[in-house]
Image 1: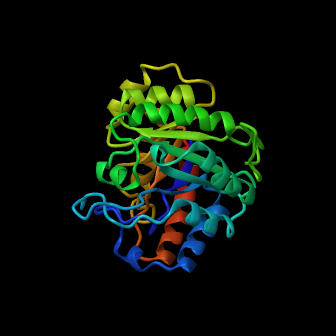
Image 2 (image 1 turned 180 degrees about the horizontal axis):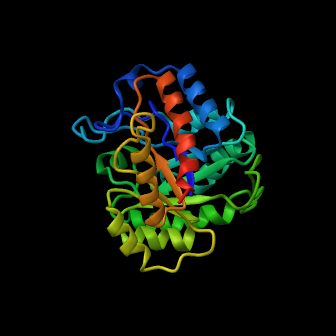
Image 3 (image 1 turned 60 degrees about the vertical axis):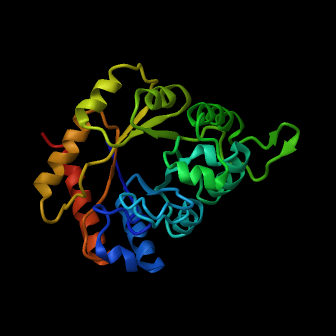
Length: 277
């Protein structure tokens, strides 16, 4: 099981974000990303919301733009993957994503993972003029189209240059329904469920025959505290692995950027303990 990091500060969701994150600087993000990169973690993430209703308090209102953020982090790292978690696919035309994120894939040396989802904020759909009522079907159509054109220089008589470094983008599909899992297993390379128990996830996974190499990306329900509770951290990661996770995407409890990096150091040692009987 690979371990990735949900980048701190770039979202501010109540109950998940720490107080220090609100004042985090670009230098803090560079320090954290560089540490995660050096320690061999699998990926960093960034979510997408253009604008959030002021009454959506449970979501928070801070969402850094994923293209700008991941491009910034790409410049200060060399190996770690950069994952959108997630782009709301009905907000975008596939050709636009192929050009913009294909450029990021080139700049980062092929380290992009495209996480995509259907979306759930009606007000944001209306603001952007995106299709709401048939967003599931639109997502399926655009995902298939994105798969087809990704990394191609010529698309429908038009030139898309630069294109992504390969024609096989790793695509993770977010969601919490059987339909999202079927979408992931037929059109994507992985599934990122949210808001489900490990039992519910296992039940859904039992309903599909996933292709070889298919990723199941699971997130602990609470931030990990490797320094304060290393045994508990290992236990949580083991439960994710036993539930079918091939990738764990984790939040980390910290008091500052420096403490966050110390937590990453300890988490790295926890991953070694994870492999022990």
